[in-house]
Amino acid sequence: MPTFQEKRVKCIERESDESLDEISDEESHVSSIDSEADAPFLQGGDNGDLLEGGRWNDADDPDITPPQPTFRPTRTPGPQLRRRATYTALRLFQLFFTNSTLQTIVQNTNDLGSTQSTASDPWIDLTLQDMFSFMSLVVYMGLVKCSALTDYWRGGELYGLPFPRRVMTCARFLRICRALRLSSPAADAANEQKRGTVAFDPLCKIKPLYQGMRDACIRNYHPRQEIAIEEQIVSSKAHFGPKQYIKKKPFRWGFKLFVLADSRSRFTWDFFVYQGKFQGNGGQGLRYDSVMELIDTRLLGTGYKLFVDHFFTSPTLFRDLLQRGIWACGTFHTNIVGFPKMKNSLDSKSPRGSIRWIRRDSLLFIHWRDARNVFMCSTIHTAHAEDTVQRRVKCEDGHRLLKDVSVPPAAKDVSAPPAAKDVSAPPAAKDVSAPPAAKDVSAPPAVKEYRLCVGGPSNAQPGPYKVPHGTQKWYQMFFYQFMDIAIVNAFLLHKDVAKSRGEPPLHQKAFRENLAEELAAAGSPSTARLAPPLPPPHPPPSGAHHRPVHIKGHSTSGRLKCKHCHAKTPVKCSSCDVPLCFRPGRDCYNEWHVAQGL
Image 1 (tube, rainbow, N blue to C red):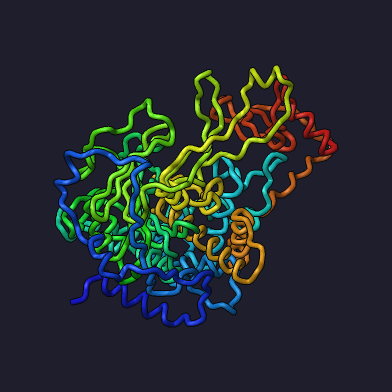
Image 2 (image 1 turned 30 degrees about the vertical axis):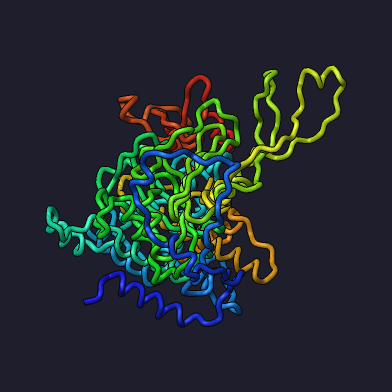
């Protein structure tokens, strides 16, 4: 019987074959690794040689240029869309949140909501159009921040936001928030009976949306040659679910995602949720197995350059990836297994730009001195080149001068500060301020490319427009997290489409604004009915005496909301039967009567 991964490969290939006229911004790079001279780089060396003895090489020692990969992707890199089709923000978003997936969520939400229905507060079945209206407000709340959900429907001069009132009532929105369900109650009950066994699925409550999102990300895009794998922490203090405690992180409690992204565009191509344990087949631990889970050459192809951080880097992983046709580069800690223990290492007194390196078969280890020590391992780069970065370096007289510090080719351009302007100053001031002076300091090529390919552009992240995740139900939190992934991916597809047509792309904020409006237009107008206005107060009988009286005998339990300022008051008008404040500093009683002409 075929495994789930094999079924997934066949499904993706079948669906991608239907899109024949695809957008492509660049052609595959061609280089050679097929000669017999390159064979030693594809073979593992003796791990013992890496551990003890020998000395580090420095920048004066020549290094070879390793063979570069032949890029052979399974599909044309870039968006897998039809060239002549018109893609609005909503249509791009629906590539990830499809109508069939949303219809499943609507049905499961109705099943749960019907169990919460009461005679005084009956549940009204949700429709697909209602879900569009709900998601429109979720996107809107990421753009316009309020301290409480009910503030979006508040009146007055400080609030009075018209968009939420037009899209959906507050009561309906809050009711959907409480009842939102991704999986069916029947499936959850059946899975709960398996708790404590191997068949129990910790992610059962998010499975309908989780698998659909992963397949949609792969189906609608193919990464270019530079890719990166990283951790993402979704902060949460939900009481249940596969929550993790991550020490030394800004948010210590949350859910961990391992993400494979295009290094240049930051498109999320594949990901999986860490469940607290990993059922990998490699037997090499979480870090090794998580990379191998995401690097599927049947879907990706070969010849890719993978960039990772110190959490994933290991000599064993990089060698095995090279056997699969994937080149790799990453930072690492000196306590990893296989790190070379050599003499003449750099110390804290070594000048910036100092380089030490050593090569063992296909692996290059680099020790570069910046503000702190930088350790890198690569199967892509040569040890050193003529690349430099600008740094402020402390001189003998105590002043800090701006110098060109040499950098490995992997890390130069992103971290370089802007060039200093030449500002004229009197001679005395020049002696005191010590203006920057440019000097050449070397850096390894690997550092330059690494910093270009890890992190990515800031406009490819949700940033300040992240949809609100405030919920104590962990599966609902993933619904909002997947919404952010879908919106960012849809925005990146929009940028590629606009670039291919020679049009200026929208900023992410404008894209989200368009998406909120289009979702609202596709929503149901029945959810936007406003509460009927309050009837005007009955006119008092002619000759009536307007006297303030207490509503009840007790001033605390007998309070009502003031008709004028909406604060609590124990006083009302005896003739108008309207609660009004009547106290020093807040005389709503007389102000309201004057406004009514009474």
